[in-house]
Amino acid sequence: MKFGVSIFPTHFGASAIAIAIEAEKQGFESFFVSEHSHIPVATEYTKRPSDNRSSVATALAQLIRRARYGLQQPHPPILVAGAGPNILKRVVSLGDGWLPVLAPQWDDSLSNKLTPLDALPEMVDQTRRLEDELGRTRTTITAMGLTPTHEFVDVLEENGVERMLLNLANDNPKQAFEQLHAYGDSIKQYE
Image (cartoon, rainbow, N blue to C red; front, side, top):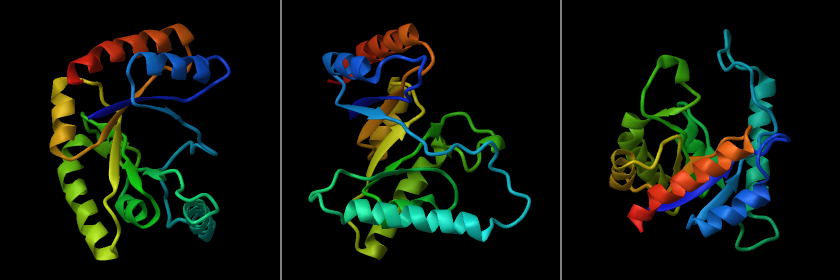
C-alpha cells in the first residue's frame, strides 16, 4: 500500500510547499493538492438536469481527452474523483485512475457525494468488467476519506487499492502539521 497526503490550500491554511517538504520527510509516497473550479451548494435536483449541465460534462470530457492526448507524452495520470451511478463509466473511459472518497459509515444524505466503503468490492469488480468491455488498461485506485488503521488498510488492500490518500486540515496550519506527523507515525508500520 502506498500512502499519500492531500491538502486543499486556503489563504489561512498551511503552506502547500511546507507540507510537501515535511510529507516527504515523513515517508509519504505522494502529495496531492486538491482544487475545484466550483463546488455545488446542493446536489439534489427536483427535475432532470438541464442541457447546460450536460454541456459542462461534455466540456469536461473534452478537456480530459485533450490532457490525455495532448503534447506531453507520457501524460501525467488522470485520476477521476466522484460518486454516483455513472462514475465508473467516466473513470474507465476518461481517466487512468479512480479516486473515490469512501465513507465507512453510510447515510443516504451522502449519496452522489461519497462512496460507501461496503460498496467498494462490487465497484472494483464493475471497474474491471468495464475495462475489459472498453479494452482499457487497468485503472489505478487511490482511496480518500479513511484513516490509516489496520481495519481500513486491510479492506483497501483486499480490494486492490494501490494508494490511501490522507486529508489534512485546510484551515489551521498547526493542526495540519500535527495530523501529518500522526499519519506519518501510523504508516511506518506498513513499510
